[in-house]
Length: 146
Image 1: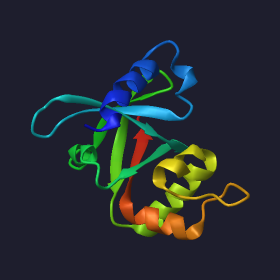
Image 2: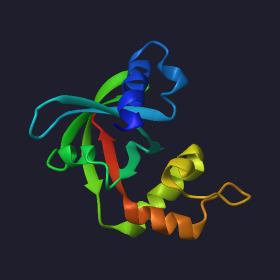
Image 3: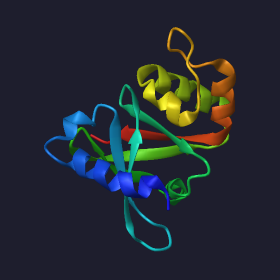
C-alpha cells in the first residue's frame, strides 16, 4: 500500500476545512469519478499559477491521472473554494513538461524533492535532473471557469 493512500485523505480534509490556508497556497485537490468504478476520488497536487491557468505535475506511473484523459472539465478545490476548471493533459511534450516543472520548482522548491531534481546554490533546478524528471512526468493544466 502506498503511503499516499494514507496521507492524501488527511491533506484533502485540511484543504476542505476552515484551516485550509496552512496548505492551500501550495496545494489544491482534484475531484473526479473513476472511469470504470465511478468511485469518487479527491487527489491533492502541488500547483503553480500562471494567470488563470494552474499547472500541476504527476508521475506517469501514477495511474489516477488516466481517469482524467477523456474529461474536459473537473472540479478542483483551490484555497478552500470548489471551482469548475477546464482540464488538458500534456503527456508527450517533454520540453513543455520540463519548462512547467522548472517554474513549479522555482516557485515551490519542496517539489524538487518529490520530482528527484537537485537544486543548485541559487535554488534553481539542475538541468540534467530536470531533463530526466520531465521524461517521467505529465502536466495537468487547469483553466478556471468564471
